[in-house]
Length: 472
Image (spheres, one colour):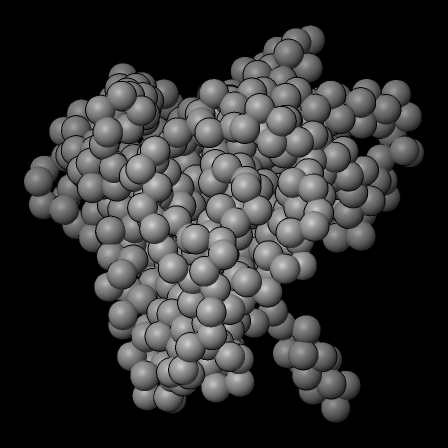
């Protein structure tokens, strides 16, 4: 009987699946088309930018066009169709990165960094700093994600303990830098790419400011981790995991000894060249989503050839990789269905009008903080970066237009709210990371919250700086 109660308690605490959350939002949006007055703004062409923008003085109410239950389900298909280019990019990217992962190149790169740290304990702090910088930069490109780095947590924890630190340091030098890099999103096609596409901005535009953000945030993280590491090395009893049995946290020797072969070096070089080539084309040649998808496919074929794979093996591995991207890709289409329903019901402009009414008397700086808080909270419900962009950016973009905020700043705010809060919300990968490292969640939050508070303050400063210089 006690077991049944425990099982029921676990079921009650289970976090709803992202599709369940999105379906609930779609149902709410459908109900709103019956209850909320329909309204519309006139759209006019901004000759300076070539974009269609809202005429701020043109809002007017129109006849209701409520969405029925059947049309609500049709919106799922329509959302997937509208988001087809983004969805296909995600499929291509996931398949390509999965193929690179299967070559062992990613394992070899991480194992090499860990081995260097372990074999040269005298220079441990230097190597740890280098590892964090590499992982942050790698994470900012979207080609290193939580999924890849989480598999190495036991290795990083074991090495950290061997160097006189604790499990918290092991997580802090592996998963957290990837999270910080992901939030900086220098050329991340899954977050900044999707958001800028919806905001009708050149893909990866404004990269200089994001590189500065990456450098500052990574420096803050390294300083915070080094402070904690030095503190517990001096007095192990001050470790937040002091007393927790870590005896079974052993190194996966097979993974730890993954050799860095010539083929794997060339595979990583091909990945680096592909990301650089993509950034160059997007910034200087006017490339867009279709060209990015093509580069990922070319990268996969080139890496397969480098590793002397037969054509059938390359094709089979790419198909396997598609399954890794299904959730992220389909989430974008399902999230887009929210916009389809609100557009069909003519309530999206009513919602925009109401939001603008709440913040129009505030300064852009106060509005920016309010938008950042909203995006941070939204990430609790929609932890998928591309899915969150599909839900929020169609609303945030016109709001930014109406209050006189540059669209690039609205994307920056989305990027911050989506990225950094992944480190704190239980709907993210950090719960899994803590479980793998045997770190109690309350101890992790005790370590993280001061750092997150610093990060939030710095995010606000970056938003203020973007507003002051009209970041574009």
